[in-house]
Length: 315
Image (cartoon, rainbow, N blue to C red; front, side, top):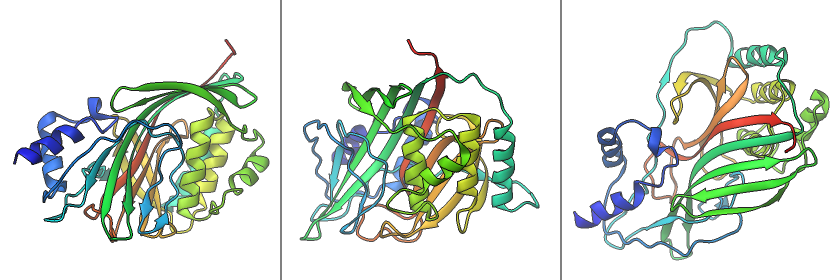
C-alpha cells in the first residue's frame, strides 16, 4: 500500500487542469477506479528540452501535435504485475435532441461564426494546457508510460515569429523563440492549407493533428474558425456527442470521429463553443483495445484545453 500511495502522490500534479477539476475526494475515487496496482517502480528522468514525445502505439507512432517535454513521470510494467498509468476520467456528455445531422449542426455553428465581427490585430496571444500519455513498447515486450502535462503561453507576430513560455508539471519554465507559417485568411486558401499534412484531413487523426497545430500557432479570425469547423464537419463518421462541461468548467458541444491510423482505434473529439465557433478543447480516447499499452479501455490518452486566443496590436 505504501507504493500505491507513492504513485498517487507522484501522479496528483500531472493534470494541468487539476486546480479547477472537481473536488479532491472525487479525484481520488476516479484514480482508484482507473488504476490497478501491481509491482511498480517509479523514476523521474532528468528534465529534457526538445519536441514532445508522441504517443507510441505498439511499434508505430501516433500523431500528437508537437511540443517540448520538460518533465514526465514513468510507470514501468513490473515483473510481478501491471500498473495502469493514471489517465483522466472521460468527460460526461449530455444528449441533446435534434433532427440535424452532426455535419449540419457543425456547419450551422460555422455559418454563425462567419458573421461575427471581432477586433483583429497582427499579434496572437495564446494560452493552452495539454496532457498526454506517451507509451513505449520495447523489443522485450516491456512497457513504459510517460505522463506529460504542460502549460503554454505564446505570443506570435504577423510574420509567424514569436516566443513561447512553457511550464511543466514540476513548475520548471522555459521561454524560447518560435516560428510558424501563418495560416491563410482567405477561406479557400485556408481549406487547401488544411489538407497539406502527411495524414489527410479527411482522416480523424489527421484532422485532430492539423487543427491542433493551427490552434497552437495563432488566434483565428471568425472566418478562419468557420473554415476550420466546416472542414471538420466533412469528416467521415462524424458524430455529435452532446453537451459537455470541459476540464476547466466551460460548457460546449462535442463532435467526434474515429480513426485507427495510429495503430489503435482512437476517438478524436472537438469541443466547440456554439456562440463563437471557437474550438475550446480536443480529446483523444482509446475506444476498443489498448494493445500493449498499460491503460484500461476506454482511456483518455491526451487532451488540450484552449484557454485564450486573442488578436492584439503589436507591443
